[in-house]
Length: 103
Image (cartoon, one colour):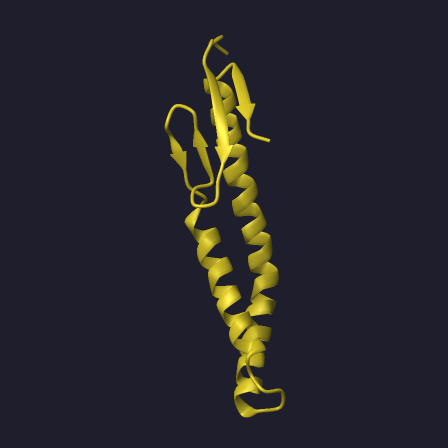
């Protein structure tokens, strides 16, 4: 591996996953955002229904079906997140000698 004297500062953010001191902005993976948004929307809809009503039962079944699928999806989310972090950290480490993070 080649020796470099590059250094970079990393600022973790809300709208973007991270911003590097060289101006590069890194977004979180899109599938992750989409799955989380869908789950939140369904869960919120379920919490607003009156217990025992027909609509409550319909949404309860959708949540149960989604949750059963979510067991597999949670594993996939975890894998997506882990893969993204490993690839990003490896890239940053290979390109820079010094890395500074905000606290």
